[in-house]
Amino acid sequence: MFLSFPEHFFWGTSTAAAQVETAGEHPWRGLVAKDGYRFERTTDHELRRAEDAGLIARLGSIYRCGVDWSRLQTAPMAKFDPAVVAEYKAFFNDLQQRGVGIMLVLHHFSHPNWFEAQGGWTKEDNIPFFVNYSQQCIKHFGEYARYWNTFNEPNVYAMNAFMLGNFPPFKKGRYFTANRVLDNMGKAHDIVKLLIKEKYKDCPVGISLNTALFKGVNLPGHAVAAFVRWWFLDRAARPFKKSDFWGLSYYAYMLFDPFPIDAIDRVGDLEKRNIPHDRMWGYQPEGLGMMLRRFHKQYKLPIIITENGICSDDPQQRIQSLRDYLKVCHTAIQDGVDLQGYIHWSTWDNFEWHLGPTYRFGLIRVNFETMERTFTPAAEFYSEIAKNGGVSL
Ligand code: BGC
View 1 (cartoon, helix red, strand yellow):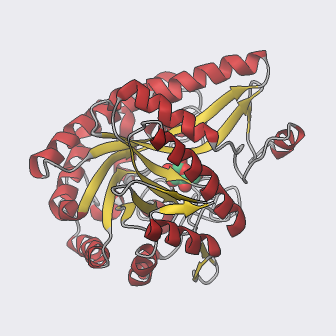
View 2 (tube, rainbow, N blue to C red):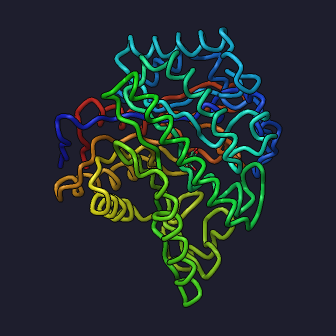
View 3 (cartoon, rainbow, N blue to C red):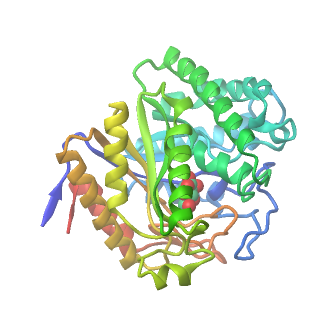
């Protein structure tokens, strides 16, 4: 059976600059990840741009990506480094010539050390630094952007950086700080959206918000799941309501007992409960359908899936997950959800933040010794989806 998507529906893949380029002067640099790899050389993308552009072009018409703020701007309010600007422009140009437009992400979990040293997102006074950086991005890269994401998953960032201690600056339990971070990002979002619109009035601007299916498995678990659901999906979304679309990402089925039962630290507990999972989380594709309906009903805005994928070494498992998830998307569209595009995470394996590069999400496999890329059967499968505008089940 072939599931055909609407004519205007677009397909693409995504990476983030910090996860694919050799680390600039940003707070992730030097971190030793859970799998033992050091956050420095990631995938050599900056040395393989032409090859990577060729691969990207086989995987849809939109490439969602970012630029490394710390490489572009080495001091507060400084003019962008012309050599780095030229490097990105040449790459975006190459993509354009291959028929690929970009969704440009301005902040994806990383910013320069000098920004972090001044308090980063915890300080409202730091917003002008981000605005200045964004202005220069609009000036240099705006012509290539078909969509903008001001922020990638502010909810994941605020939670991991200020409540769980997984992301720099590794703070734990700072609930009020996390909320302040969200509000500061929201203020920055509103300002930057206006600046983009001044120059590109029809270009859609939004964020990407992470969504997940949260469920308690006992009484305390229900309470925690209810709180996390509210904070993650409602409280964290609130500062970003002035958007042209909701970019939503979805990966996880999160169970609580009351502690999170994930496959990173508690795989045995998921197996005991017969919950299918990937290498990181419980697997429940229908959760994506629930999120699409929830956001459609609540906000009546167009939706783009800005990230979706699974953590696995197995291309066959990745193919099956594409089938599962796209079936869910197709049904949601039939039910009236204004879903405009699907962007898969990720184009190629990359540095999975505090966990490390062996937590693989790529359609394209990367050998981390040689950095050689291999177009896996899952990449072939996705390439066909993008070409045919639908998926065969
Ligand atoms: C992030 C990506 C990350 C992916 C897989 C998303 O939350 O935006 O940077 O690699 O999930 O964990």
